[in-house]
Length: 317
Image (cartoon, rainbow, N blue to C red; front, side, top):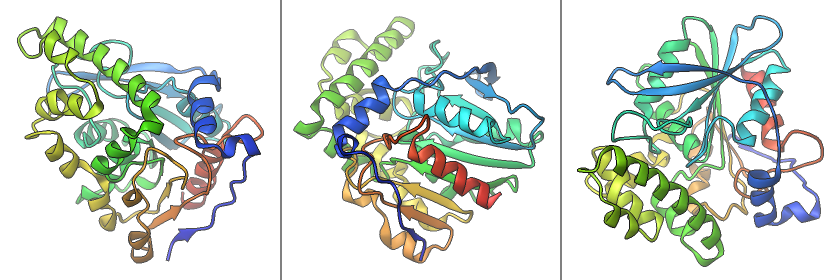
């Protein structure tokens, strides 16, 4: 029964969902040097990989997956990379298609269930590392959990994983984000997504129009117009249904920790899969009372989830 007791006790101000979420995303700074590599994908596209290395040659690699409209330079990515390299790991932070600062070549980009790209990254690095662990945040966490649960022949190099602030139920979580309390977050995501769509219009003017983009007034509309259609799904609901990681959790067969704060305003109740954790001995669920969405701020340079991820993965590898 891997329901994990949480020991995260933030200061009073960071018990507030908004303070924790906004501070971590906007005000936290974590500089960390990275070395970029471009990975050419089988279908003619590319993704950019940002590497960090420990001082001594390591045989252990952590692969990081960012959230919606994120990148390898977000503080939760660089913070995790810095902590792990200080503790003897090499770290590979993946920029999803179109998220590395340059528009990718194809009309499609990334989405919450694009596990084929993760497979290509793993195939690229596994000859060099006998021990690989995975860490995904939000959308990247959903992608990670889906990959672990759908993969029939998981590479033996992959030993353990941690997922943070994951919308395991994509449609339910979308409904939460569209609540009035999350209006500013949705507007920020929407502004970034529409800017990316306008860049795609410039490159593919026959596939999407400025008028269609301008008409999108919420995230559901973006997924209906672009995310679903560009990636082969019938519509937004079909996309949510087929890519929500909740349905894949019972099949996870390596030690995997999910940390979802109970006060995360982005998550629906289905994103706290207690029953799965009670039945699957490889799936660990930790539900801190506080933490917000990829927040978990505490005293010191590192967040609770970063230190907890290192602790968990070190114990399993």
